[in-house]
Each structure stands twice: as C-alpha cells, then as structure tokens.
Length: 501
Ligand SMILES: [Zn+2]
Ligand SMILES: [Zn+2]
Figure: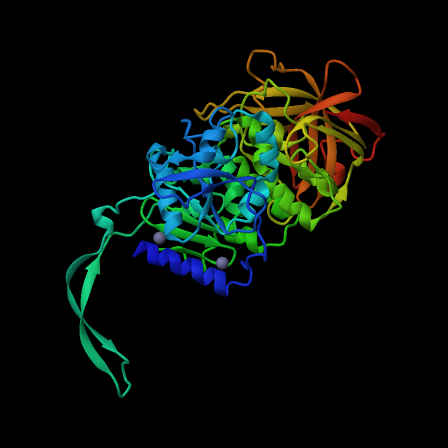
C-alpha cells in the first residue's frame, strides 16, 4: 500500500506539476551505481549520458558506511555484492529498482572518499547531482546506514476495527442510501509532522536526518524527496507536501515548499541561514561547503551579485546583522574559517535581526571594498582569507561581563560609556579564562551600520593586536527603539576608514 501511495505521488508530480517539470535532459553525475545486475551492483564511470537516476540522502551517523576508496575503486566498477551493503543501502537499491530506475547515486560510493581532490571536484558538482535527480530517497528516520529504510508500523498506529457504523450517502437527494461501514480507530501520528516545518531546530529526535547540515541542501535542491519516516512516508516536491496520514497536506507550509515558492530575496537568504545554522555537521568546518549548492542556486537569480563567506555583497551591511543568543554561544574557533563579520566564523545557531519587517532605514557606513581568496576558486566552497574596508563613525566603550542571576549558566554583556550602559550580544564566550578572554574594563569600539524605526545596529569591534587600523568583530549591539540622536553610538561624527577581518 505504501509503495503504491509513493508511486502515485511520483506519477502525479511528473505528469501534473508545472513547477516540478523535469528538464529535457539531465546528464548522469561523474560516477553512478548501476543497479541492473541481480545480486550485485556496480560503480559506473559515466560519459554524461542523459538517464534518469535517484539519489540517497542519508546520515552517516558517526560510522563509516560502505565506501569507495582509491584501493577498491576498480573493484567497485566490476562488482559490489548486495550482501556487502549496509541495511539502508540494500533497502534503497531494492526500492529504486522497484520504481523502475536503473541508476542510483550514493555519496559514500560515488565519490572516492580518500581522494581530497576528487572530493573537492565532486563537492562543487553536488548541486547538480541533487538538482537533476528524478527522485531523492531520504532515510529520514535512520541514524546511520545500519538502520535500514523501512519500519514496521507500531500496533497502536495501525487501524483496529472497533465496530460498525451507519453512514448516509447523498443525504437529501433522491438517491440517498444508508450503508453499514466498518469503523477503524488508531492513534494519531504525532511526532513526525512539526519537524517538517520551519524554524523548529531540535524537534527532529525521531527524524535525525532533518537535523543534519549537509541534508539541508540535498532536501532543498532535489526536485522530489520521498522521506522514510519513523511512522509513515512523507512526500515533498516544489508543488506539494503530503504524508500518508494526511496531516501534512498541501495547505501545510513545509520548509521545502516555502523555499520552492518564494523568489529568493535578501530576507529569504537570511531566513535560510537562520534555519541552516541550527543544524549539525560532523565536521563543523563544512559550514560553508554544505551550503554551497543553495548559494549556487541563489546566484542564478542574481548573476551580478557576489557571494562572500555566506553573505551577498549587495546586501552585506544587512547580512552582518546576525547575532548569537546567550544560550547558543560557543567558544571562539581555534582555526580561521571565515572573517569575523560573517556568521560562518561561529559554530553557533544565529538569528538575524532583520527578521520581520525591517525596512531600509538609514545606512550609517560605507563599504569601500571586500577582498577574499578561496580554497579552490569556487567562492561558495571554502575561504583562505577575507577582509573588508569600511568607513564610518566610532564610539569607544568599556566591556562588562554580567554573571547569570536566574540560575542559568548564560552570561550576558554590557557596554558602558559616560555612565550609560547597554546590553550587547557577544559572538563567543569571552568571559572565560584563556587566550580569547576579554577582561572586564577592556575598551571596545562600536561601529554603527544602520538605523531604522527598530533602532540602531552596530558592530562591536576589538583591535587585532597587530595593527591599530585592523579590527575584528566580537559582537552586535542593537539599541531597540532608540532615536537617532539618542543612540549610544555617535552618529555623524568624524569618519574613519578601517579594515575588519
Ligand atoms: Zn511536484
Ligand atoms: Zn502524517
């Protein structure tokens, strides 16, 4: 029954959905699994043939699934025994064959895992791998590749016949008739639905895949996703979202559907980053690469814009208005990953101050130039360095860490100038002893970015020890509801040109 349900969704999408219309030709990825053998599959190095294929979206879950390495790459091109595959892969192979699709892409088998150059090359193409797939099978309830794809529905969720009931059809009409019908009862499926909606990090306990960083773009880029949940199947495409129990239906606004429907805008990007920053990455250094595919998608809508460290040049002064809530704050990273003005430089859940109605307001800074060097020439994958030259006004202030008073462990922070004190949001734990400690009484600088009816928004900066004109961001100061001339920061005073790294 479940297979038929999924097949109907698939057919309906392919033949009736305008938004999901597949492109005329979709070339196969560099390598793909050919499922046409009987008790084996094999790795096939493609010649860009146009064929239909499926993708697997799965969580590695800290264990290494069956993988292609330099040493077994040739062997895998001859044969991979089905019996050697972990349960999830085995189930997917069977399911995809049943759908009548010959080719399947699984990251751990189709990318040579111990070849960093292959990984980089294929990572850049990941965007088109998911974009061009006919269907993405998501092992959504599976923590790792051993868990398998399917679940036996628990008894309380299966309908139990409890009796019969008289049902009247066509009431009031001439062909009115009453029939005895069977009455079934079952418990409501409660756990799977919320997790498909937006802004609900941490609600994915039963659906661990939805909490994974890499899966975010796999899900948003794939034209069609069939989720294998812990209690039911869930279908997602650009035009519809359905689950078997019908609690997720077309009227529900799931993350995927919202992103498919909206025309990418500044706000769209910032909300997407909000959602994405809550997800887990096995390697936190993947924070930029795991979003690379979506950045490429956005590029299509703004070909003349420039992507720098998870932000866009045309809106960069607003893209810098992210903050970290106390409870989400982490230690400063040891290795450089991104400039301090980018959210990529922290390992925390961030939130954008521009959510809700923001308005243009008045810009209080001028960005003169932004320089960046990339790891491999692709601005969406990794960075080697980046800095910004910016002109604006400065206010000096003194930092004061405030210990928690409510029994929590979250420290807050105040800035003080001339006896006035305001709260600021720090990007990292800076009160802890160690190399990143900023002791109470240290002088910091406030650099206003913009002012609107919500208030004034300023970067909190610290000079980097090497040079007086080079600074790094340590936090964001938001003065809610303050009038321009009552701001804590001097607005319209002497201008200064600085570099922020
Ligand atoms: Zn569709
Ligand atoms: Zn449901």
